[in-house]
Image 1 (cartoon, rainbow, N blue to C red):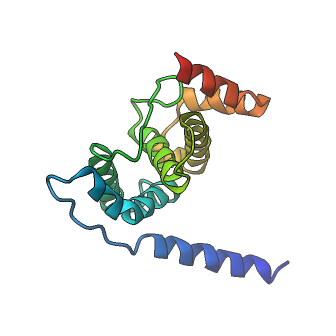
Image 2: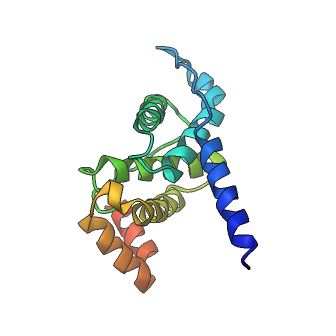
Length: 165
């Protein structure tokens, strides 16, 4: 057991360094809907980075990934996002971005995923992000409430009710 822990620590540090070593292309001003698919790998890299990196750690890279993702989403026909104030806090940009990144990643990885499934995954990933980086993100009453609902096993029901409204 003592030999495994240092190995895991080195492995996790290496993964964190690798996650920060990708560069993003410049999106053209105008694109055809079919051209958005050319950037899916870059978007998945952005989503993975945004969901695993502390937003306070490398702020320029975080901002670059955030703006790239939002700009791509503004015209991409592949992802149809639903943002509900019952599922994410629009006043906390880090949590909102985690929700958007998780939804986008799941939607691109599983092309036939329903919006309900994407919303469930997005909320769960956002809560995982919140628990991991609470000191950087700040306390969220909504996330605390969602965590309590999740512990009761009623998160999927709450998500489906929020999407129906």
